[in-house]
Length: 474
Ligand SMILES: Nc1ncnc2c1ncn2[C@@H]1O[C@H](COP(=O)(O)OP(=O)(O)OP(=O)(O)O)[C@@H](O)[C@H]1O
Ligand SMILES: [Mg+2]
Image 1 (tube, rainbow, N blue to C red):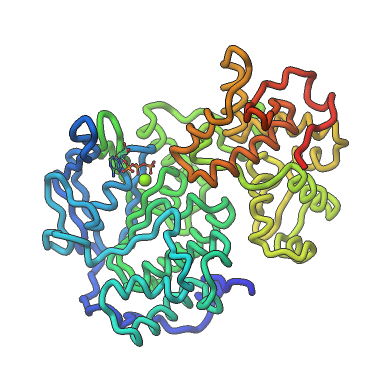
Image 2 (cartoon, rainbow, N blue to C red):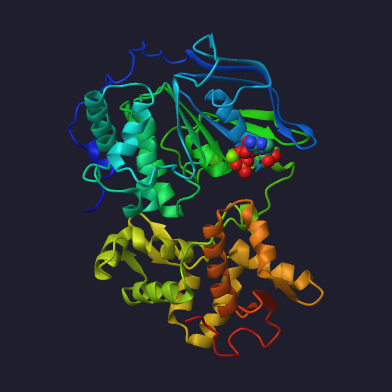
């Protein structure tokens, strides 16, 4: 069954239903009312070598009616600050208040959406959503009714009795949203809620969330969004707070966004703000696109950590590109999925891969081949390998493996090396999948070879790509 989109719900004639009546009544905060405040907040973690300072001198206010993005590089303390604001971590010093009252434990006015969804696999969608209320001592009947409404609001009706493993990543995150929204928090806290999703699903969910926020049907008065994605921050936030991490997390600068919604990411004002934020985060100007990089891939901001490779094989992405080429280079995504008797979600990783490699773009509901993608789809094996080898440099993990091998004296490196690097950012299952994809792509491009015994990558110093038959995994 296809999920109902929030857009279709919003277009419908449903009356706004607030409040759920599930939590203790709280007067609705007027726009501008101070909800959360941190003053001179510091936070240290206890480490083997004593205290590890993570946040220092943080002053931050969150008011009703605003979306605040906390932006910063990995390790700058974004999640730590969010958890402090949610009352899940006590600050080491300084004060934290919610609606003027000092926090002494979990913040009653917040609910959290996590990057990893954090659903309980043995509970159904409905039960997972009800969890948020159970913890607040709400009666079973009220819980059930409120959960149904939150599930409906977030476009999940029909999925109440499904288990998380039956759902795609995007649908799981909808459950994450429903579970947070069901308690009607004053402030919705989101810790990188879209970063575990493929590009298209993330884009869709982000758009739907913003429409819901704009529509006035959102049962929350403010949002704090943690992200390391500048574009996401500029797209969504009213205020962007940049955290710096040297020597430890402080607020480096705040930006008022002030762009009209819905925001046009191609407008000069949007681009200009991205540049300013980028300079603050990195201390240098944003480079223009590198020559030879795939069009549309902002390679200067991609790393193996923030741009996981979509789970798509070279066979899969060539096949889909060929299908689109046969239909004139442009194809409605839903029709494409129908033709393959698949759900759109099933082909998204492949679509994502085509986008990452600069082979295709999404335009409205259509997947459109780029010039490079058209050449790739129409080429014979030899040519397609050459085109692929140039494009695959837009895939950060493939570039990481290639450059590391070039720097290693023997031109070989154990897979364990890359596992360790990736383990900082991914679960071991994700690491395995990332390396499988990188192995497939790098082999096809003839950048490197991989020996399963003894799990080692080796520079492919043979001829140029295309001169040998592709060594492919079964
Ligand atoms: N429970 C903990 N105990 C000790 N150190 C921790 C703990 N949690 C986080 N840290 C450290 O605190 C620093 C900030 O971590 P935090 O997770 O808040 O950063 P972040 O900005 O959210 O990073 P990311 O973008 O990778 O999620 C890091 O150096 C991290 O290793
Ligand atoms: Mg974090």
